[in-house]
Amino acid sequence: MRLVVMPPWLIIAGVAGWPAAGSVCAPDAANSALFAEWSRIETATLASPALDSVQLTESSLRARLWHRANKRTSESGGRTLRLVHHYRAYDIPSTGIKLETNGHLHHLGLEYRVEHGAWEWAVSSLLAASSNAGRHPRVIDRDTVAWHGVARRTHRFGKSVSVIWGVCRDDRLGRRRLAPVVGVDWHLERFELSLGLPESALTWEAHLRWAVQARIHPSGGSWRVFSEELDRRSRFRQSGWRYGVGLTVAATAKHRLTAIVEREVRRSFRLRLEDGRNVRTEASAAWLLGLRLQWTG
Image (cartoon, rainbow, N blue to C red; front, side, top):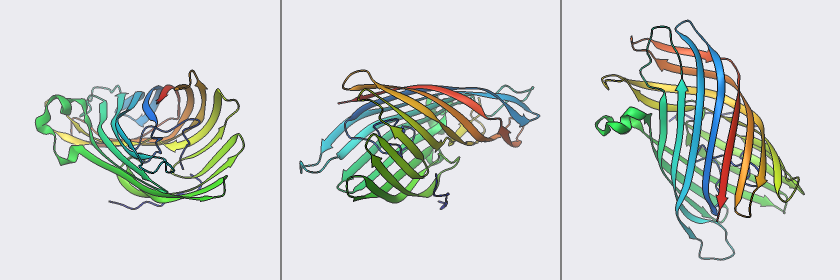
């Protein structure tokens, strides 16, 4: 594992506005029964003579399977088990050269989270591989299983300020890394400002029924991929950053719908071609449109 220090201006979006659902490192309210999200990134050019362009369709699902509240009624949280599935479909046309993956990549597994007082721990075991690994379980080994986790503590100073620190391991920076989690959270009437790493957000609760949030966060991932005949395997990595806005509307007391518009920048890909060449290429910035449904209960 590699320790990475990131700039302190880059915490965590509160669940009141636009919760993050793509990583175990994102906070998760115990009463959240379901997150479902779909998004699509427009076609962007690639800076490689062998590859023309890239397009991405993405979906995320986090479903609560079991929850046990803390015995002390004065303490929130408890223990929660969730099913997690994050799916990406990359469409990368090439000029006569095939990739060693069909472009259908999955993070599929379970997440166990404990919240006790000021502390929060979570661990997630995921199958991180191309879809043909799921159809042929014989190729699944320890390299196709990703272990992600987080441990953090929240210190509250009065009713408006909180300081968060801890450590996290996931692959949102393009590879599995151990990274610090540090940030400050201010609540100012209808505004919440979260400054930290690896995410920052500003939430405006304009009304009891709707809120607006601006957010910046990493958007990468790492997967074990296999050729069509399953005789070759390699690592597919993508890194990048997203910034944008989301509008959340409370459809009912338990259901929230969020529309998302983001810009993905500093995009890069590391992949292997069928002829054995390893390719690292940059992609132009692109727009993303998405929808999310959150169900609490």
